[in-house]
Image (cartoon, rainbow, N blue to C red; front, side, top):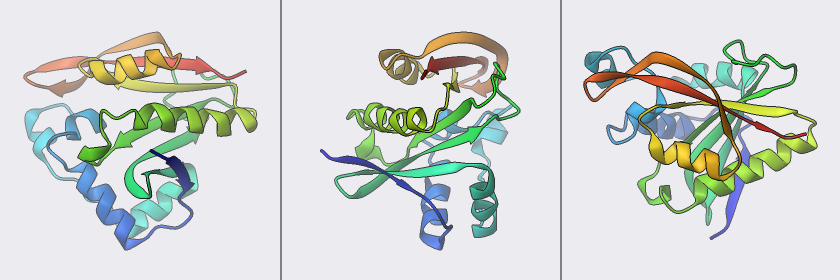
Length: 174
């Protein structure tokens, strides 16, 4: 299986529709965005082409393709205000494998490694991310490729009748 990261340079209706489908998919929405209640979790969120155009001003977004099929996206914000460790030049990472046939096949692992190569070549010293406490599969993925826990933000998101922490993890690239 060939995995590639393709930089998203311009918003399109097709990409907005795909992102909206992923961000409202009941099977994964609880993994994507933090919420404070079951009602908020069930509420649909819709991005517009203008929203994505604005997001491209602050994020590097890469579309993840597996054998030429779009299966997810990974995005990076540099020196994000919500970093736990504000080391200059740090990258904040977001990863979504939106297509069901892209999950559990090692695509996330390969996408992370490809992204790390790019960021290392740019001189980025470290990557930081947050993963919800209940998302054990993602925690295993990140540990497998070298991320370590640096902090926990308690009661960060609501899912399955309770509040869960956001586990902050980092990986040094230098």
